[in-house]
Every structure is written in C-alpha cells, then in structure tokens.
Image (cartoon, rainbow over all chains, first blue to last red):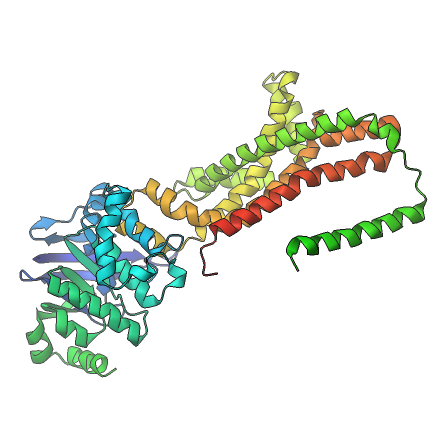
Length: 250
Length: 247
C-alpha cells in the first residue's frame, strides 16, 4: 500500500456550551513508500488514534485528503460504509459483541455484511480458528475469554472478511505482558503472511520487528518519518530519542 | 431447599396468619351469594386479560418509538417525545382516562361502542411513557465502543440496531419492563371509570348487589395474581435465557 495524506485537519467540539474546539490533527502530511506495514508511534493525545479512525473510515476529517494507492477516501457515510467493508479495524478493547459467542462474532460480518451463507461462513473461519489456536474457545462468550483471546478473535473477525488492509489501534495496550505477547505474535504472523496493516502501538521492540516505515506523531503532525532502521537508529530529534529511550526501557 | 418449596412455605405462613386474623374477626362469610355471580367475575377476568394483552403490545410499540424519538438528533422530534413522557408520567391515569373519553373521544365523535378501544389506547399511552424511559435507559447503556465495532465491520444503522443494540438492550431492560407490565395489568382496573366492564368493575358491581365486600374483592386479588405471577415467571425465564455474562 502507498499512503498519501495531505493537510489533514481534525477538530472536536469542546464541552457543551463552550466555543472551544480542540484541534487534534493540525495539517498532518505523510507520504509513504509502497509498503506492507506502517507503524504510528508518539505520545498520548498526539493524534495517532484520531488519524487511524480517519484511515479506517470511521471519522471524516474537517479538511485535507487521504488516499491509499491513489484512491482517495470518500467523505459521505454511505460510501464510507462501503469502504469500511473492504478494510478491517481492531480497537484497544471491547471489540467483540458480548451477547454472541466468539464464533458468532466471526460469522456476523460474513453473513450479514458480505452475504455468505451460514455454512460458507463456518467453512471460512474453521481453518483460521485452528491456526491461531482459538478453536477450543470458539463457543465461549467474550465474558468467558481472556483479554488476549478476545483480541485475537477480534483480529480474526477483521481478517476473515479478506480485507485489503487492517487498522490496529493499540491492540495490546489493555493487556498484561503475557497476553500482549500472544497478540503480537499473531500480528507478526500476519506480517509474514503478507497482510497489509497500519498499527498504532507503544511496543517499540515490536515496531522494529514488523514495521516497514515508522511515523512519529505529536501535536497533530508527523514530526518524523522514515524506514524502520533509519528512523530508529539515525534519528537525531531529541524528543524522539527521549520517547524511544523511555518506551524501550519501560 | 428448592425455590418453589421455599415460596410455598412463605405462602403457607402468610395464609395461616390471614386465617387467624379472619378467625378473630368472627366474619360472617357469605360465599354462596357471591358464587351466584361467578359468571360476572369470569367474564370480567377475561376482559381484563384481553385489555391487558392489547395494551401490553401497544404500549411496548409506543415505548420503542418514543424511546427512539427521545434519542433523535432532530430537536423538535426529541422535544415532542419529552413533552409526551413528562405530561403522561406527571398526571394520574384517572384524569387521562376521563379526558381521553369525555373530551377527546367525545370531540372526535367516537361512538360508545368504541369504549374499549379508547380505553386500551389511553392505557397504552400511559404505560408507553414509562416504557419509553425504560427503553431509552437500555439503549443509552450500550457502550459507544459497541457502535464503533459495528460500524467498523460495515453494518448499516438498521443492522446495528437489530444485531448489536437491541439484543443487548433487551437483556438490560427486561426486569424493568416486566415490572411495568405487571403495573399495567393492575392499572387496567381504572378503566372501570369509563364504564368498561373489566374485572374490578364487575367485582364492584357484585359487591354493591350483595353487600359481601371481602367475598367480592378477595377473588379479585386472586384473579389479578393469576395474571401477574405468570408474567413475573416468564420474565425471570427470559432473563435467564438472555443472560450472557459468565455464569
């Protein structure tokens, strides 16, 4: 995928009654090479998640343009819904529908959005469930699953619809270290399998392992961006060095 | 100890206490004369049951529509629903029935043979206002993250409502809805003020004809329980069925 973002601005209304709008993205530009995996890092509140929501077609920016492989993102809700059906998104937590089992969560988009029959959908999810060791948990409701199992099923739900690419918004930040490892392992495996993705994460060691390019986002802009090796080893920006020092040794 | 047995023991103690109370009062029971009016009780009970079922369905529909209106982004729609809910909840059903029948229905030249229809409508509007608030609370309780997840997989707003929001909201509102339905069954007794011959109306008639007050009203209590207890049991069964937290 080749991502081009120009002059992206996003504002959110302040508290009700106040006239202040918070500017979260402030004319953000980013043009990547033709890569498989882009990792977004940066301080909390810097605009990473806001950017990812726009890329995933969940929010519409105030102004600016975004294009994947030259195709601009639509702005009206109906076209955006069509776009969202071609990509997969995984949030920090609460991805799964609590009233459905893990398996039913996987089947829902296949049957209701992508028009597969129940039988075809079950066939399609069988092998991926097996590959990621989730078959024994398929018939449990989210409340009976561990955080790591929930996130892996959420990633699988985004994956089984055969999306063009995945958007992962800090998928491990709500998990303890052991579960973080199992989710990151799954993402690393997807990278080997050729899945394209944009990942927001604080796991710098993991970013080094899977990213083709890394962009550092702070104050609503991309303040540094480059191929992974160049970015991590050669950056001279003191703010980024400090960020890396803290997150790598955290 | 099984729950039914526990309930039975509590009931037995209550019945014993009641029997003692009546024994000390030296009542002159006159069940015989009331028995002669059994057809009136029977017919009134069925009328109450039919009115309740009709109002139960209608008020649920009204409640769903009003709850969606309460959450509408269109200010006027939201205000209309808010005014409806507050006016109805803030005034006695008795007054609403009198206005509904003697003012609104009269102004619309509704014939007296449509008395039951008007009664069911007013009762449904009354109960619907409470339902609306219950449903609105249930809808509000669905976390925003669930809506994001639904949008992310490409659900349409209607699919979101049907596949994500309603199944979760139903589970949340069930206990309150069941309570409201039980109230509705008992509130239907007020329909007697517009001369609808339901259960309470008929029991009152038997009382005035026979001067056997308790013999007329005790069967009334039993008759209402015969409707409300199964309703409660049904709600508990549904709650278990819709439960999805870890047991």
